[in-house]
Length: 180
Length: 180
DNA sequence: GCGATCATGTAAGAGGTTACATGATTGT
DNA sequence: ACAATCATGTAACCTCTTACATGATCGC
Image 1 (cartoon, rainbow over the protein chains, first blue to last red):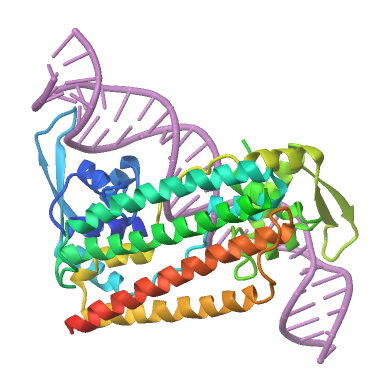
Image 2 (image 1 turned 45 degrees about the horizontal axis):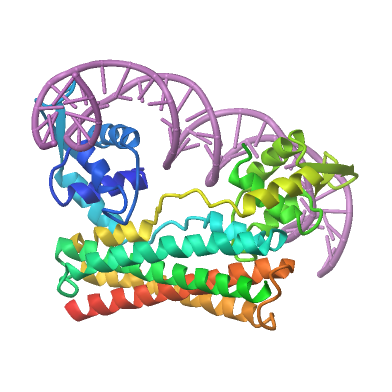
């Protein structure tokens, strides 16, 4: 019944209490690498979660016309999250615009296609360097019971993904260079 | 103005004329690895593309209450597709349920988390084997001007992705095994 | 005759983006 | 004084999924 976004919010709140604004910041790349949502969606979802009793909040005086609301996980919210974590994920369809462009790339000018992939390669190499810098802040993998294990393991997934992407882009550039 | 789904349909039609039903079949995994959509969405999008003059169709007598419509790319559709191919892709936010579960995995029972990743590992290894079988049907990479280059290059992306995923799952299983 | 495949469509609703709306505090 | 950051919310719109609706043809 709770949406995946709902669980994403619960996962953030499991680390400590946060305002909606802070949750939005936590879910924005490149700070974290697990899910994204805009503040408009987060505020709406927090209202649903609060109605369902999975989170609670204290209203405190803050900037702006409304009070700020500091949300925290309730016992029910924690239970729901723990149950959800080990359930198999729903298969999401792959939708990757670059792969789609690749599928149609035979139609286009090879020089322009090569430029596209050279650009993408640069993006992935930059992101990889950034993730590598972040990895250096850890002294090896934390214990799986440590919250920091979640950060390390997702970072590790990001590292593998960027390496795979960069390698694929490099292969594409090589293929297109050979044909020019 | 045309949505990404619209270009996906144009990319399929660039290979030859198809009915909406055939386009849906072409876009269904694991036959192809580039984009997915249900037939309901495809029929609606085809109507928009036809209105915009990017595709045309012949109605022919076919099964069912309506005539079947065989769609083909128009000259304008081909031009629009060629231009779109080499434009940089819009950044899509990463939304990966397994990564999210990983982020919250420190809360759950390590034995159950390990089971989750062992299961996912199996899925990725199976898909990898399937892609490898498909790769063997090619005799090396086709020329970048050949339509089959599109198939080969997207398959290559899929191969790299499944290898990266499988490796990450294996690492997760090892981490969780060590802590048990 | 029966089930699988071929074939096209509509409608309701969930999930997500973009734009609009407001305004205090903090640092320069 | 000005800009950035903190802070919450609503409304319109787009994309995608699920369910409903229909029915002919082909192979067994």
